[in-house]
Image (spheres, chains in turn green, red):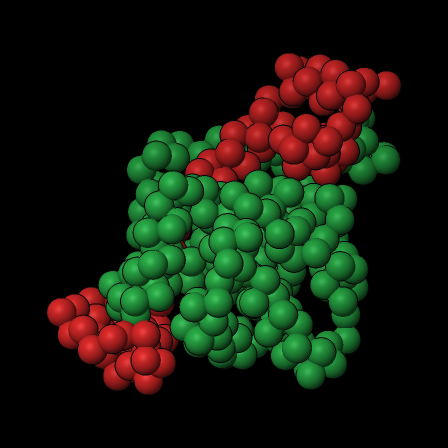
Length: 221
Length: 98
């Protein structure tokens, strides 16, 4: 398990040097310490849990069970690993238990069935073999004017969130952890137990679909 | 051999991830230098990634904070201190209203 999880792009309460102080506060039952730790780790924990189980509500349950186990177990935490590593190993164990209870059809490590395959861009947008330049753009993308303004709009953010929610769950987990949470590819491979290659394939498919959704939105369809 | 645009779009993530061999990187960059459509595609992908980075994190359900607070109360760790009582769930956004 990666030791640098707390160093993602999101502000985390767990600066390396502060870990002992933080653990002491948690052991003392300091609710504010728990509160801010939960706030900084929840989105990522839910994504990781969601990659093992088939529903959002079950993922929330796994996260809750994990925190309750942290409350019970923090007194026994030995500082042999980073606190976040310890928490994520509890999470992965609980998620795996739930995941196998659900008897999921596909292991996460497989890249996926037909629903997750497909080209990054609709083949109709490229010239065919009969055209002058087969495989080159027939309908090229149009530059997004003033992307700063449009891409910052609340409406676009909602569109992007919707498109992200509609991705197949493994693509969504990888894109969320890499591009929303800012983890490295190594961290994501470790958390989700993926090979580097499968991680890239899922990332590519997810990102490509999201670009397509934003293109459809910006071009006004 | 020249890349097609259709090939380019499938290589873009590997290009960003520095997962291509040197000859393929050269082909990608030669293609980009000549192809306005693919340069636009790359710009759009970068804009998509920038928009993803700006998505707000998912709010923590108020119920989770309450469950932790209640477990802390029952665990015996809280050693009787009540100087920072249960965090107000109202701070946590829409989920916390229940």
